[in-house]
Length: 332
Image (cartoon, rainbow, N blue to C red):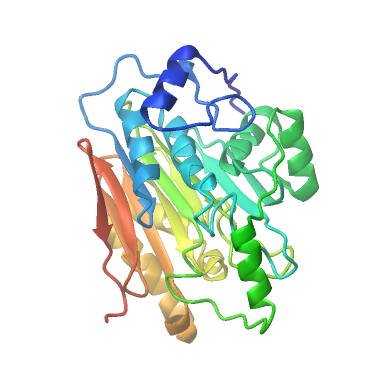
């Protein structure tokens, strides 16, 4: 298993200020590593994509790629923007709680070497994608859960903080009046930021982080922290990430499926479409939930597809960061 030692430097603080980040100190953030800057970048432009219209998050990742950082650093810094955004009720601090009022976070990361790390049901730690990387780099394991993951975080310099904000608590108290659980398409299922990046060296990495479905059962885990479902990378081929109803993504191991379809000659777009068709063909109830995929290959070609209209993918390419409206299996 590959190991790295992560250090914070003055130059990294400068980058953080330039990009509007506030959490570059060790223990709270994504721990960018100056040793991973690519000194002799390829001529090709770097690419970053993410689920949903997380404009700032994707811009942070793309700009780091342009500065010469490796893909793994870029995606962890990018998703951290939403982990720290308390207005985002589906990722990180400010996320909607489970039915008992507890905010629990899930995340995974995978780099170009095939190394990966994940956390599930973590409380009190905001930057769980960065925590997943620490597990990848500092332990013999891939996954840590619950209290064990939180203890590991605290021992490795992460800060404990309350994740339930007054706004999320108020919404939960209102939900308790009816306890009606029916996920709303493109609203409650807007539950993940999955990000993929191709750096100037031609390497691909990814990260996926979420607070999961609002008012889920205690202990519920979706696809987001599961390698092969919410995220998968094969640096010879490409990468994919998922968002939406995690149970349906798990059943078809969606992200792994997309990468394998690309291995067999499909474009990222074709592979995303086929992965959605697999879900639809196996579940006649697909009209009641959303699933969406994004993908990238080694050429920097990208694709995205979803069940219902309304999903967008962000793409940073050629120094341009734009939202791409995704085609859907069902039409308006």
